[in-house]
Length: 356
Ligand code: PMP
Image (tube, rainbow, N blue to C red):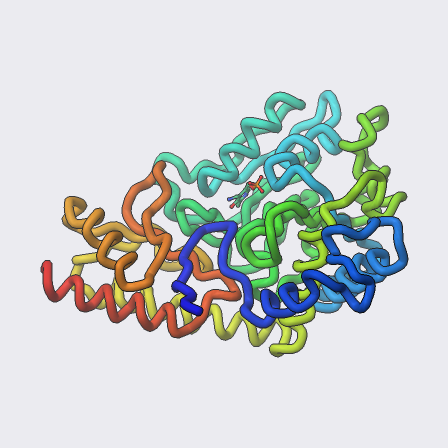
């Protein structure tokens, strides 16, 4: 079996023990003679899978009482619309902190629902940094904890005078967070959790009580909360594999240990950038550097294509930067192995030596 080092931004690499468990369960889950994909979501076994996944996610993130955990569909992209439809009432304002392309998409969607303001915009500077302080006074303030395309990440939990809504799609479970700093967290599964399909929403009850009335049921967080994420058929396979990932994270030391691994992994690549004498140029300001998506360019951009194809030939897959930005992006989520970061750092050094 040959597995590549998969630097894809998402869907992305999953822990091998999780894949092996899913494989072992594939044809016959616990003597049922069927896979999880094939079983009723209303049966006792799936109910157990869902409840265990929820409980393990609560344990991992230390989610306090007074918060709901929901598994929805529609990706983080649907949350861009659901949040303002639910929490931005006429005559009110929501503040968006835009530190990259996903925050931009979020505010564009929110403008269709109400008065959404760009309170801070990193766009003029090419999205390289995060603000020092967050705006106050709105119905909520929306931020993206990690911008997947630009590789810009907040280094700490926010403090704000407004309820904080956070798109955590690309760094959830990569480090401990203080959930009580947030009114609502959302994240698609396909980076740090499992296969695409489920979108996790963690929402404070008190914030939920402010939700507008009259929403269509599928867009109504309270309907999903009341039905324990079973208002309709949930994304069962995505929830099951995500549950295996949560258990795996608990078994490998929880989020503090995960964070330490992630810091060490990212450092290997940033050190290769910083030590290249300008051959490689990091995109984000050092204080806003993402531990999940390391984004850099080559000083001589005409070498970028060659860099990516030579890397691919050496089993370093998926390094081509996002089409909006060019350059190189190394996505190194939780399940991406340390050896892959070593291999990339080595390759970078070698490539710079040959072409510098
Ligand atoms: N927000 C962020 C930070 C993302 O990285 C992505 C996906 N790359 C999205 C939102 C959109 O997620 P989805 O494709 O699940 O709708």
